[in-house]
Length: 364
Image 1 (cartoon, helix red, strand yellow):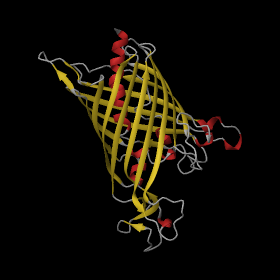
Image 2 (spheres, helix red, strand yellow):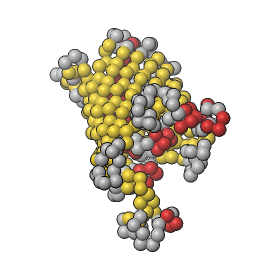
Image 3 (tube, rainbow, N blue to C red):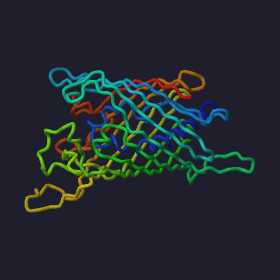
Image 4 (cartoon, rainbow, N blue to C red):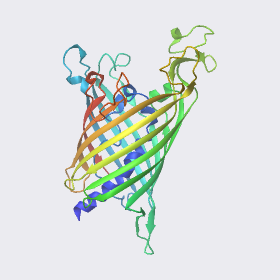
């Protein structure tokens, strides 16, 4: 019975993971732009959660402390790019009944060891992530006595839908002149393979960013030397400077997650995420366009591969210790000829595409 209870907790978590993951528009622009968030993603820890809050205290949540080291730290010689970040993740959720819940998420990370690539501009930086407000719905069948159980599709598939609102509290989003971002998503999960010890889920999400400008910009007060008087680089009423970095208009994201429960307290998770980000600007072909160029919307693809192991060391499964290896990289190699292995960076270790995280979390 304990094993099946743990499996039910993971059913809810597997369906929540993709819905939260696709709600991260601010960190999917490039691998370098999201390295500070490697330890602060709500999806990467493997803590098992209570199935529902108590009547006396309807809120549930998580507090997690992460320690993340980049793969470049272990590269010998001049190519070494050491990095170490400390992260704090906060989540609060409110169950409204019949499969509907609301949640708010916030991340903060602190760079403690910098390198010539990531810390040249802002060494030892403190980074606030975007504030995420999410709502999710998992259809329920309610009996005459008021009891509820999940509504299943043929084959025992559990379905869930969600909507996330991202507020631009991060420096990256403000640089991209983002007003907010909306992410509707839907997921399917199969929770009961191998007697409830193996669960699989898939999620599809669509993110639409709402930005003031189609290019990232900085204020002329902070960077006056970057612009000329009446120069074409001045935008938005001559008060901001266009940097040339194109903003993402919308993104499509696919998430596949597999979780195995060797014991009720021990869990092993494998997650793959593919981001297809499309820019605002459209590039048409002209007389000077290379034959190898592909005209159309600017596009930047990104993949995440995560391997996580978690262990809950108390009977109520409130305290959890987890270890994670997360690789965030372009899907293709630099020469655009071969696909990169998604779960470890064998090609460019110094770039810190792969990070290792050790976390402790407390559920309430």
